[in-house]
Length: 573
Image (cartoon, rainbow, N blue to C red; front, top):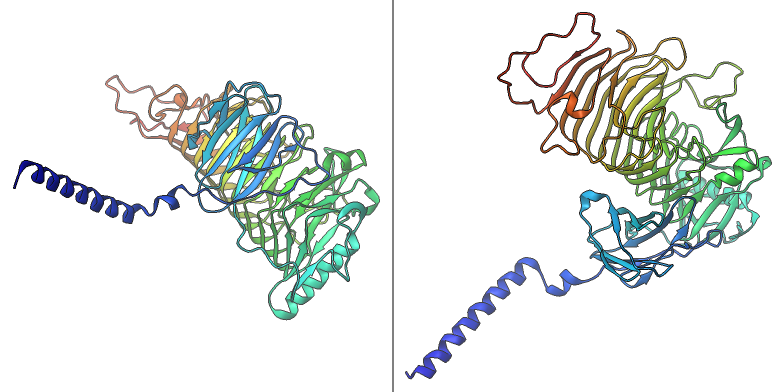
């Protein structure tokens, strides 16, 4: 064999080996086209009652996505299928982007900048807050594509715009009766068939008074559909009175008391029209599952409550998923989501933006005979809060990011906040036992990321606050068995973290801080000083883990005998 033939054979063998390797690699990772295929994008139309952003335009995988102009921030939402999404956010003033920040920071998403556009990749659906230079924030929510969208007509489907209902989808007239008739018909069908009848609300704007959901009813809002409060107090029932606001409140969409098996879902919006309602003399609780069970909310946008916005009341077995709550920053006491005296509640993959607390639990007790207050229409006797889980939350507020309290008239136990991000707040995580004599036990904050603390609430601007006060001037109750684990604190605030009881019988006990990362410190905090906790009062069995290595210096003196605290930081004493 000559040299030339030998070389050709060697080259052929090498190429064959490379081809075999490539085939094996392709079998492992799949076809290249599948890896690089962009996700299909579905964007809702801009509803006629909203205005487009004057700050940003947005495309996702080349699809234009409307950006809604709102009070204090803009927002945009879309659904995406399998694959990645290339997101391009453009400043409408056409000035070059100097700095782009994308939260949650823990995702590590970095934008490339070109002229007035910031471009980045979302590998999967997620909820983000984007800020370009000094412009206002853009809340950008990507949901998984819809897989359970019902037909718009057919057996068991009650389309509100079809005969005999004929609801006005233009937003020109109030169409309460038509929508309620469709809801009632769906409930009757569901009860008769042992399933659920489905109310279908197509794209459009629907002005309505109070709507009541009976058992065995599903209500689907199509992308672009808006169910909206109109500012006419005479159209709404008085369902609560808020003394701190000195005004009546109405439950815009609420369940029938004693109902079960109800679902609200889709990619539409339920709008409390809070500022307009306030000017008309009333407040709106937008969605109120009250005295119900087996209730589900999935995928909806809830906007502009003029009081607490989504409030489960004395109910059990409730699930909330893919929920977007957008409230204003120029209206107070507009909590996004409050669990009130309910049990077995899960809130997953949701964003809440509000001046007041976006995600909290409360218990308020029984209304006094003849009194009009928050609870005078709540059914039955007071109930405890039990077994509540918030998982995958994004919170932005001027108050507490994630919170138990202030009302603890009845016991609250087994409340968990996990895998969540506080984008901005006055207090990152907290238990604020202010009103009532109930006990708070078994609360967990786990895998929480606190990004910034730009505000102050009751002189507190801190990453954590666990404390008891006497708001009713007749005593209070205890806080115990609290675990705060795997928390990344990027901003510790400007005031001390709080671990503070009120008295020996209303103290704070059995608190564990475990693997807390504080800014400016490598590794985990190993002492209360590292955590910024100073002077804990009426606090027992407070532990910081991991323990600091033993010190060669003599053991510190024991706490003074008149100190109402028994606190450890993991060191041997």
